[in-house]
Image (cartoon, rainbow, N blue to C red; front, top):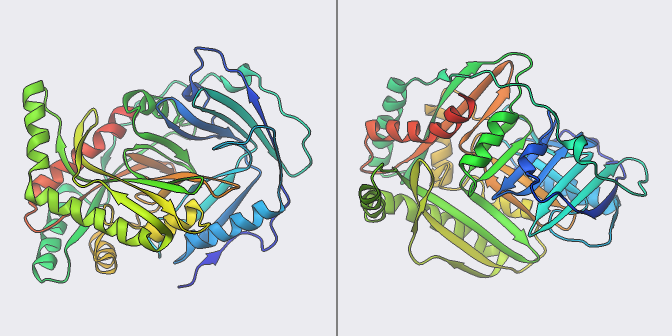
Length: 420
């Protein structure tokens, strides 16, 4: 399938210098967000970035592969200086990719000017430039800006209201009953107007505090806190986390445990989860010499929901980059359905909007091809003077439209609370 690269055919030569630094003991990475910035944070570790040196762009089918090829070309020409290389150091690109092959949203891989990183007790700063760079310094005050006080944003009805969403679920169930479809993931949207000077940093910071075990991301105007790791590659090893099956948390500890148990033993949720795991394993097998998935899902607790979760790990058999693996995986059964082609066609028929980068891969890649990409969930996008959020759920035989609508409300809670 074809794709369209929107970047120049000849990429510039980049220069990157990385130096290890010492951060104050009480330094919080999320406090270093900048208005024009980028962020990828989990459990207080990760990276924040500012400025932009260049960006790689692609649209259409094959857009992820196109970005991966452009990235390889860019890195092959780059001059990288780092006396202590490691994950996330050196030349790094941050990307946000459209969900659908035919989306109007342009997928992008952005190379920032400065990156501040912290992982496993080590901190570093990287400067990337079009001109040779001899050194880079860190000044804490440069990164700790005063943020604009957030004006509460109340998200309201989007293009697909609650009644029409339930009708779309019923239509999907009819398709499943016909025998051509096992699962489809349908979403709905909520939206609100925002002022010209809207600053998302307070909302992003709240997400890092309230959902520390999730991957808080901010790339190309999309931000959120995703619980779902699409794929991570680190020195020839990969890992992924599949989420499928959701239930609300209970306010009483005993009730909460009962809810988790019921989720684990739910035939509907177990089938939805099994399809998602099988889809991921089948997609990755051609790239791996070894692949192991959890024998049974475990209950993953987030502040507002329980998820059925399975971890998948393995060893790569070739030099595939994290982006190339993301291309093989996307869209997973957890965000599209199965069979993939039938599910994505039905999504186009039943959803009255372009998902854009919602449920698409978002993350980062290093010059060595290692990196970390999650699925852009539990968040929102800023576009055209509005902020819009999406939430979806897996429809399988036995689903009830009213229950699926309630599940979308659960999944909207993180972004509603962050913006309120």
